[in-house]
Structure formats: structure tokens, C-alpha cells
Amino acid sequence: MGERELSERGAETRTLILDTALAAFAESGFRGTSVRDIATRCGLTHPALIYHFPTKADLLMAVLTRRDDSEGTAAGYDELRGRALLDHLVETARRNAARRGVVELYATLSGEATATDHPAHAYFVRRYASLRRDVTRAYREAAEAGELDPRIVPSLAAAQLVALMDGLQVQWLLDPSVDMAETLEAHLAAQFA
Amino acid sequence: MGERELSERGAETRTLILDTALAAFAESGFRGTSVRDIATRCGLTHPALIYHFPTKADLLMAVLTRRDDSEGTAAGYDELRGRALLDHLVETARRNAARRGVVELYATLSGEATATDHPAHAYFVRRYASLRRDVTRAYREAAEAGELDPRIVPSLAAAQLVALMDGLQVQWLLDPSVDMAETLEAHLAAQFA
DNA sequence: GTCTATAACGTGATAGAC
DNA sequence: GTCTATCACGTTATAGAC
Image (cartoon, rainbow over all chains, first blue to last red):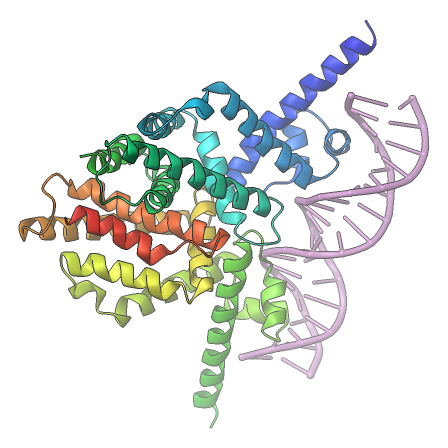
């Protein structure tokens, strides 16, 4: 016992905090959430939480980077090429309809982080740039494979697909009868006709 | 003098407050903005502002409904049919690239208002429902006129176009090299091929 | 119609005990 | 690793003078 168990308990607490923070930021955004509220939901006091994450901004960034890691390692996203990657995004949308918290997190924060002084501003600038880069490449690969309508411009199509995913998330959150995956699929189907 | 001038001055103050509040809510969202800050920017104390708009939520709703009124009456939006309405939306996107404040306002608030307890939640639910209704009708009219690719489903295309506009606004705010109007136009061009 | 003063509370963060 | 106690400040809103 001793060190081993202690650090394991610390890791468990960290995980609990990150899960709880994700839900809170998702519901009320970064600015609308208080450290105290997250701590209470964890059964902690707020200085106890601050011990693990020195500032509220640190906590937010930890939530975001942890999600990126789990998303990246999970599905072998990096190995997908061409239309397979685009289909994977539709599949992600379908899966997300059962994970409201994650959708709320990005929908709420991406709007908030539009402000240049927001702690996650740089993160979202990078995120969209790399998303558009990956999707542009996928469209280009599909075009080279002769699968794509030749009038489609890959870089524009990438910005469109990313925008579509984001916009549909907001509409779905406000009205669950909006079907994100179906609507995305119809968009892709038209481009690959 | 007297009543006439008094009420005119009151109306001027109200207008100044609404303009300033729009800019503030756009920059920092509803939750990130304080009534004090808006009042100071107007050269007022915060109780003076509260005299005109009893609560912060009232002020937000006044900002939103005023924008709806001026948008609605301005361009004769209601009289547009079919593709003309869709083109008008592209034109609005083009105009909005010169009005960052308005774009920020809706991009920030639509994410925030995803939370059911947000003061503008009901407003955005209504807004998207009526937007989709109008755009669905425009697609249907274009289809009846034989202008539209027959594989396009009006209701899905409407959700797509609205989502596209929203998502592109976020991307543009984070990276001004994203061209909202051009990207929207490419989307429409493909549907009307 | 607008002000000063203040109430009542919530905020992120720190110091130091245990 | 977590606590209590506290700081310094910001929040919306109200009371009452002018």
C-alpha cells in the first residue's frame, strides 16, 4: 500500500472531476459554471478541486484535451481515407445523438470561444483548422478515386461539412426531432451522386 | 417642451443602451456580460440602466426582438419566394461579413441558449423552427418551378442550409479567411445543378 | 428620469491546519 | 489529499434622495 494506492485514489478523483466538469461546462458553458458547483457535485469542497486543477481555465483545457485523446485513439480515425472518413463523421453524429453532454459541450463552448480572450479560443482555432485540413484531404482522395461529383471543390466542401455538423448540433439540442445523421447523410449522398 | 422632449430623450437613451448591449452580449455572451459594464459604456450608472430595462434578461430579449423587427421590415424578406429567398440568405451572409457584432451575437447566444433555463432558450427554439419553415417552403417552391435537383428533399435541405449558415459563422469568427458567402453559394449551386 | 448608497449574494483563488 | 476560513472582488437588484 502507500504510494501506489494514494496515487490511484488521486487519479480516480481527477477522473471524477473531469467527468463532472464536462457535464457542467456542457450545460452552462465555461462562463456560466462555477468551480464551487463542480466541486459540490463531486462531493468535494472547492479548494480540494483547485488542488487538482490550479485554475478554472486549466480544468476546462484538461476536459477538452482528454476528450480529444479518447476520441483520437478510439476509432483509428487517423487511418481512414477518402469517403470512409466522411462516413465515419456521419457515424459519429449518429453516436452523438446518444451522448447529449458531449454535443452540448462543443456547441456551447465553440460559440463562447469565439471571443479572443476566452481560455479555449486558441484551442478552437486549432481544432477547426485541423478538422478542415483532414476533411479537405478526404474529399481530395475521394475525388482522385473518381467517386466524387467533379464540380465539388474539396476545400469548400470541407468547410461545408464541418459547418453542417456544428449547425445541426445546435438545431438538435433545441429541437430533438432534427435528425443529425440523416441530414448529414443526405448532404453527402448529393455530393457523391 | 416637457413631455415631448423628455420622452424623446428617454427613447434616445433606450436606443443607446440597446446598441451597447448588443455589442457586449455579442462579445461575451449573456452570461459573460454584466449590466454594470453595459451601463458604464453608455455613460450611465447601472441602476439608471435598470430603470429602462428591469432585468438583464429583459434587456437581452429587447436586443433580440429589435433586431428581428429591423431585419424583417428592412428587405421585404416576407415577399421573397423560391430561389430568390435562398439567394437573399447568401446576400445576408455577405453583408454580415461587415457586421461582426451581429454575427457574434447569434453565434454566441445560440450556443448558450441551448440550455433550457437560458432566458433566450424559447426565443431560439421559435427562431429555428420558423427559419426552417420558411426555407423549406422556398425549396419546395423552387422544386415546383423545376429549378431544383429532384433528389433534394426540401425539409432536409432547409435544415442543412440553416445549419450551414450557423456553422460558417463560427468558423469565420475563429478564422476570417473562411468565406461564408462563397461557401454557401457553392452549396446552393450544387443543389440547383 | 436619473442618481448615490447599499443590500445580499456568488465568484475564483489563497493560507494554513490536519 | 482534503479541509476550514477568508480575501478581494463582481454580480443583480432595491431603497430612497434629488
